[in-house]
Image (cartoon, rainbow, N blue to C red; front, side, top):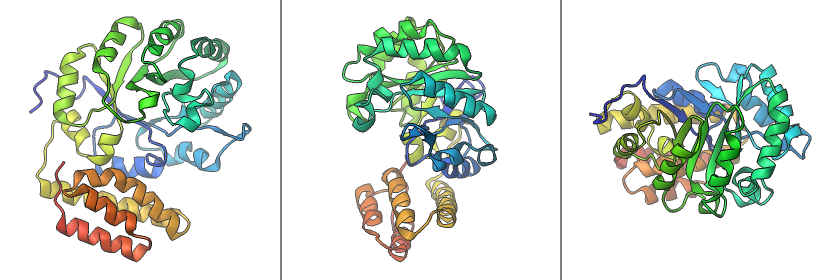
Length: 326
C-alpha cells in the first residue's frame, strides 16, 4: 500500500521525453498496455539545418498519431524567431501548450548553448522569452536542469522565469555535465520550491514506489511528477504509483511480453530494413534488460543479435529463462 495520504486524482504524472525512445509508436503502445500517465512530452523538435523540421519529427506530432494520450510537444532552440515559428506551427496542429527544453545534457547540444547549455546564460533566456511570449498563441512550460556545469545556475534562472507566465517548470535535479550519472540532488530541488512562484514538477531518479513515497512526503506542495528512464525499464512503476496496483511477477512478464511484441511488430511494419529495426530494439533493451535477472547478460544477448533471426532467438531465451525482477 502507498503510505502517503494521497489519491490518484491528487497528482499528475508525465512521461518524460527520451530521444530515440519515446516516439509516437512507443507512446501509443505503452498507453495501450499500461495505465497511469496523464500526459507525455515528445522528444524535442529542432530545425534541421536552421530551416525546417525533420520529417520524422513532424510525424511524431501529427494529431492523427497522438489521439489517445495528451501530448505536449517539446522544442529545442536558443532563438526567439525559432521559438515563435515552432509555437505557431504546433498551435496550428492543435497544440495549445509547448515545452521549452533547457535540460538536454548531451555535449553536442549543450556546447551550442542549447538545452542545459543555455542555463549559464540567463540574460539570453530572458531575451528569448521577452521577444517570443507576447506574440505566440500557445502556453509555455519549461523542462530544465539545475545548471550545466554548476548547480548554482538555477538560482539565476528562476527569478527570471518568475517574470513570465509559464504553466509549469519541470526540474530534473541534476546538472547537465552529470548526464545521467551520480544521483539527483533532492536538497537543491527543495530549495527551488521556495524560490519560484511557478508550479514546479519534480523529475529525476524516481526509480521505485518507495522512492516516490519518500519524495512525495518530503515535497508536500509538489503534485506534478515526471518519470522517464525508470518507467521504460519498469512499465509497472507508474501503475504502482498512480493506481496503487501491484502484480505477480508472472503477470508482469506476461503483460510486458505482450507490450514488447506489439511494439516490435509496430517497428517491423514501419521501419525500413532489419538494421534499423535491430538498432531500435537494442536501444529499448538497454532499458528493458534492467527488469530481468542477469540484466547484463540479457542486454549482451540483444546487442550481439545482428540478424532478425538471432534477435528473435535471443528473445525466446530471455522470456523463457530469465526472471522478471522489477
